[in-house]
Length: 106
Image (cartoon, rainbow, N blue to C red; front, side, top):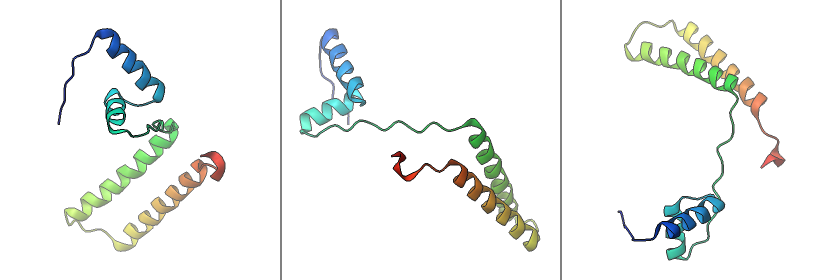
């Protein structure tokens, strides 16, 4: 649902500054103010290393190819499929281990 209010440009700028300082959207600021809720600052999405994204994209591509072949009912040698899935599992485990944050990082 959409609710519109009239305001002066100065009021809007002021409210937007407050929202920015609190790390929330203007809509969230208004909702929390009217609803009596406490605002929590949004968490920023973690920065992801480009090489990690490339590696995950490569692995995802391999999984897609295997899935498409299975969906088309193309013959897949069971042993070859199992070997490739084990390789992907190991690659993901290595990536996870290399990019895990220490427990006290949060």
